[in-house]
Length: 293
Ligand SMILES: Nc1ncnc2c1ncn2[C@@H]1O[C@H](COP(=O)(O)OP(=O)(O)OP(=O)(O)O)[C@@H](O)[C@H]1O
Image (cartoon, rainbow, N blue to C red; front, top):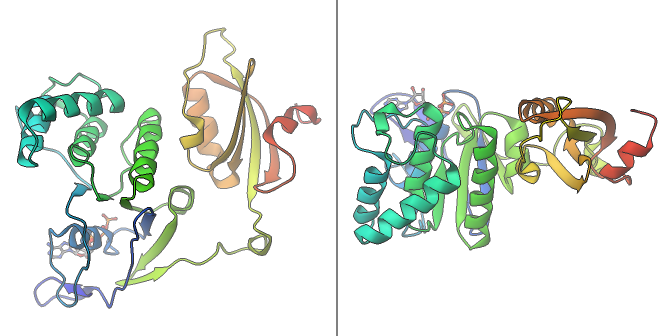
């Protein structure tokens, strides 16, 4: 399909993409490249100028890039209302909304008014709204921006669950590290053209190896217990091993700084960081046996 607004320039040209059931499909591209337009067409909010969208599942969940309602309505009331719009009874909608808001840890509570919510918390409500009825197609526009590290883990779990139950997840992001870590297939959007991204470039691509780090973390120096994190869900993490002193992780090199930052913010202390590759024969626990401490 192709898209332009009125008689303006073509925003998307001859786009031919497939988002099969059970897959997490990413659209990566810079600002203004047409990602949001593509998603709005995918969910049916906008029509292609030429061409069609085929086989859209009956239940579509959509989280737009911005959700900033100026409403006095509470998060719980809004979600119950949206659940009823989607055909649930009031009690079923309310119960489902409660479960989702608990899982996403909405700060301020479910009775906070929508207009009082921070960007990240408003995004949690938008995400809950998209999940009130199990979606056959879940479409998320820049879902990682604005969410805190704990919510990142929950979002990753939810995406995996939707795909595992035979649904399709589609999301956008402008960061390659995120699409590489989260998607089963990635399309690149650039100047109106959309192409399937092939194997990662670089000298290591042919062997399947990618630069990585083995990271050893322990409880914080001040003696306080660090916060538990869903390490498996963080960007770039490919292996996790927990023991009594802490946790050992293997993480893609490009995601190492972000992981260390998140760990320190949550009260962990960095013991060692060792360079390796993603399919190196050593496991993360070997990192403590070296001379890198
Ligand atoms: N309703 C509209 N009318 C006219 N032009 C529009 C409309 N919506 C989007 N555009 C234009 O289409 C182009 C693509 O916008 P779009 O929002 O799809 O990009 P994007 O890749 O999602 O960008 P970002 O990452 O900044 O959100 C932009 O040039 C934008 O100005």
